[in-house]
Image (tube, rainbow over all chains, first blue to last red; front, side, top):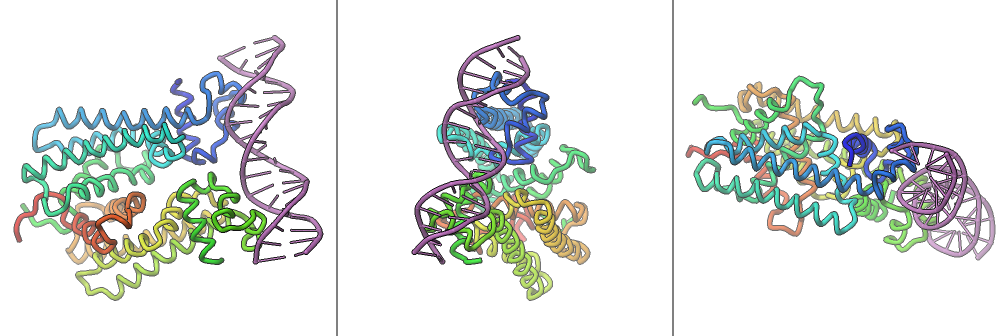
Length: 189
Length: 189
DNA sequence: GTCTATATTAGGATAGAC
DNA sequence: GTCTATCCTAATATAGAC
């Protein structure tokens, strides 16, 4: 599917939600008549489906690559950075994926859920290895460590403004610092 | 507005989204005909509006109360706990408030935005005081500390299951630990 | 590949009886 | 306070010409 179409759809779905977005407005933003859209797709839902699959795959692949190529002590930092850079590079698509995928028909929704679950497991495995290596605390179950990391990563998509003072790599560094060291006043090392 | 109606609406809006939810299904879940709903409200949007205002106010009030009544060193813990208990006590309402308030008409949306902003400022002020008192790190701007705390608190609404092993106070303690001390292996105090 | 015209369905909301 | 019947609008999607 053409990138221009997907970009326009992502932008529209972010603003109106998938259900509230109309093919009228999508066509208008592309300078087409409604009917012309159906040359490129079979249904409005196809757009959401492609956005979700591409979004999920891009995170999963970039984070896997980042983990593999990082030295042992830097895997978490590298993963967080890759996640944040991937999602903010295509912020609309990833925001749509997160908040609208539930509107897919059951079969496709399950497929995206599996991708999501598999990525979450990637993160859990990474955190587990770091716990085993003694670099991460072991008094919090792996499961909750991963969920709280997801909290930190996902909600960022809803407030980050690329026009603000922070660029994605700097934001990633902040998130990493907080996730690893916490917010309390640091004792001098 | 009657609680039974609001509870049914919150549950429906969580599952289908505000736009995707139909008055048909809402009426059915209450054992009424569609038209009968309009004895209690003027439009479907009224439901969303009431849910948003009640949701925002309940957090704001309970957290303010928690901060006031806590001893100096315990304010952040107390605030987090109040926030998490308030939101999970009425999880559907608060999830709807967070993800659906953008579908309010502009005037009402702005009103809810103001409530939201005012609560966020409450949190920032608290964090600022703690930074000034030397209890929280000062190398991360207050603004980002507050945003990352929001990440931790908000996204939780989307995965927490009351049937799981953790009760809200226990989850609050986990979130507090991570926010304050971070995930790295703890040096023995 | 894009258009005009239209089929079809379903939504929110209202009228007015009981 | 709840009902049946209906209005009105707008949505997705299709047919078929150019």
